[in-house]
Image 1 (cartoon, rainbow, N blue to C red):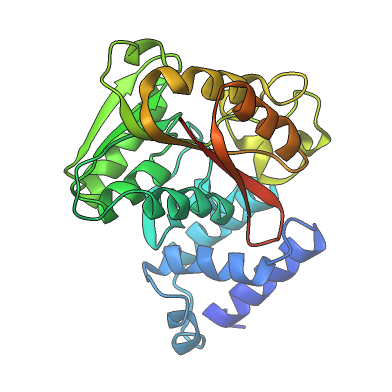
Image 2: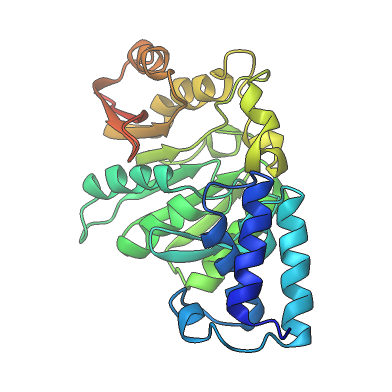
Length: 284
């Protein structure tokens, strides 16, 4: 029997579902097929459903599905992931951008005037998704992307070039250390490592393939968050804002760190799933 696009996608989705690889096996199979057919829109799969799957595309699709069956994240297989309506290069050098982190961008944009100069720091930028999303929508702002891992910062540079962001610079180093002589920032945003070292989720799903340095926050998950929060006041101007993401159930502990560091106006934001995920405060 001639294998069509539709049959190949259906069988692949069944394999993924049988292994319980994903709750959206059909969508993932379609996304992987799109890449093999060099198409860009998921709806194009439907219009080409009865196409005969050519050998080259078929072999590539088989390879994609086998990698996914082994647990490798779709974002790493494809080498890209959408975030804030833009496509970002993704590699195992950085965390995969997730929808819940878009709230960091929402809060930042609400505090950065569209027509005024502001200095913004994305601390631990990863692939650059958060900082670059801000840069593209606030062209008068100067965005600093900082990370401790050189390969990760290289990835953020590649995404900057891909998206043609002009108002961006890069800093390599351990948290605030390379920035200690900087002029004050108007806003600092960060999605630091916040998973406890022994968290059972580390053995499940996509997270198994992501870099530990971007995930692990010590015994209680608060080590990196504490560094980001306690170090921020020295680099923020008066009235400056710190925005951080944190893990489920960490809101009270993180809010206490904000208060201890002297922040006021501390607010918590829930992610699309209703989980308290983002917190921000103002330097008096």
